[in-house]
Image (cartoon, rainbow, N blue to C red; front, top):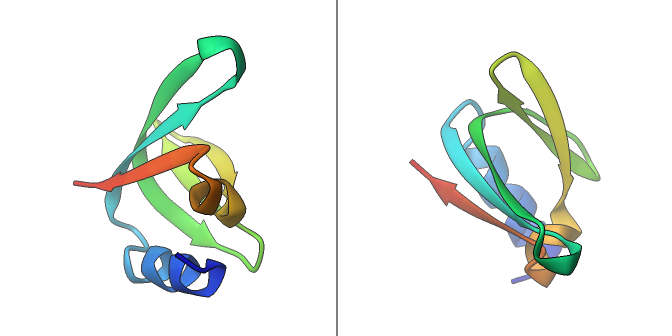
Length: 70
């Protein structure tokens, strides 16, 4: 999927609840549960219990993170 399509899909789900699975190095995986709070040209942010965490669109494209819309 291209970056433009990924950006558009995430924009359509602004303020929707998501679960983001992050696949880190050395099998350090974790999940972020919250809602998409902002969309910027290079990143988007997810609010998890009042804390904003940012993610790159390119991480979605490369499979470093996976977004599940709930």
